[in-house]
Image (cartoon, rainbow, N blue to C red; front, side):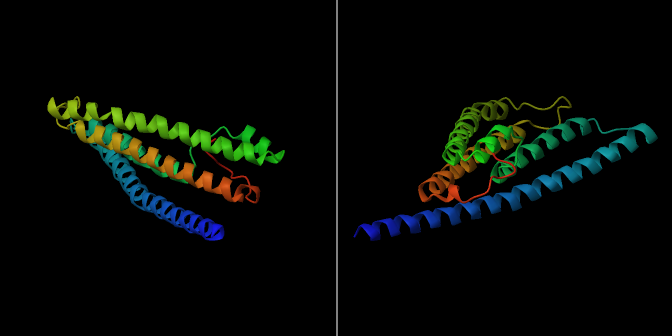
Length: 195
């Protein structure tokens, strides 16, 4: 009986890990692709603007605003991809030192704590930021050129923060599963981690 309960938990853990991997792969493909296309298109647009401005002496008045809002939106999307890969900027020298000394439980507990802090931080910004989206929508806020509305930009930022919080939640559960199963004892230290 007890063995069946543990087997059930094992199956549930494997199902969750598969779900988490599929979600993160989907984020990588969709948001990574959108970010890459946006950054490439905006870079080409900026080059066109440079030629238009300095060769022909004309420029679109919305070009600068569009480029800034577009680049920040692309970067906001890619932050989610970076969080899913656990590849963001890190200060992991201490964690690698702790891992090298054999304090493996400390490393996995640190990963859980840091992922929890990231989830709380990004989730709180993502949730409380909706009033900014609403304010921009109701007041019809626009960029300096008065041609580009700001609410889509704010919406992208809030969705990105919420997705980062969701990915951090998935990583917390993954790390807890690794801790419970003892998998952290056999894994090598990742070159990058969110600790």
